[in-house]
Length: 199
Image 1 (tube, rainbow, N blue to C red):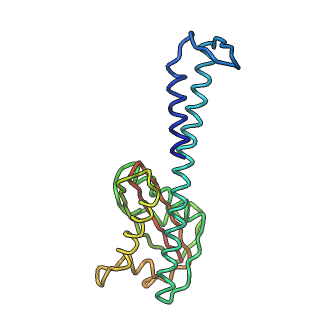
Image 2 (spheres, rainbow, N blue to C red):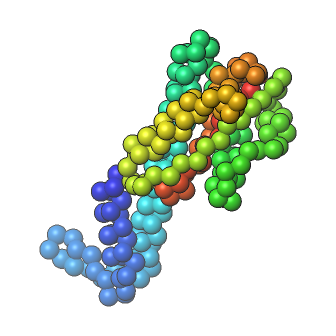
Image 3 (cartoon, one colour):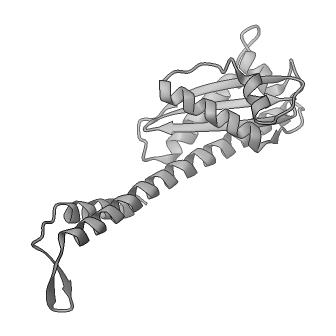
């Protein structure tokens, strides 16, 4: 992927700096290219480049969400708890809150979570939320993100009473949660995680 993006950047820079004196080669012949054609090619390459980067980042966010979901259910299993069921509507609520945290560069709980769940047509008897923030030293290394997620999750599971709110939420010790939504938002080498638990 990085090699592909590097090639596109080089091609884009070449085309975007061309003038009306640009030429294209076919076999052994060179033909002049109009400025509008150069601009069209440059814009197309730029659009593809942006889409590729977005798709790559979006896929990483989904992979992190799936990984954390597995970690949470594994921890619950170790403690004799049934697995939580992933819910796409709750996912969207969690994702939106992670985006809000990223936009404002803060880590804070969603005080309107109940209303947001109702707006997403999620009916509940109780709910809870954990949030996390991570930073990696190399945003081009996917594994770094998963390593940090593990540190965050394991840190929550290692909490001791009476300061064990995250662990109790994961295990559903105050409310016996049945469903979960997970949302991750990546901004450069930083990322925000929201996990919403619902009964």
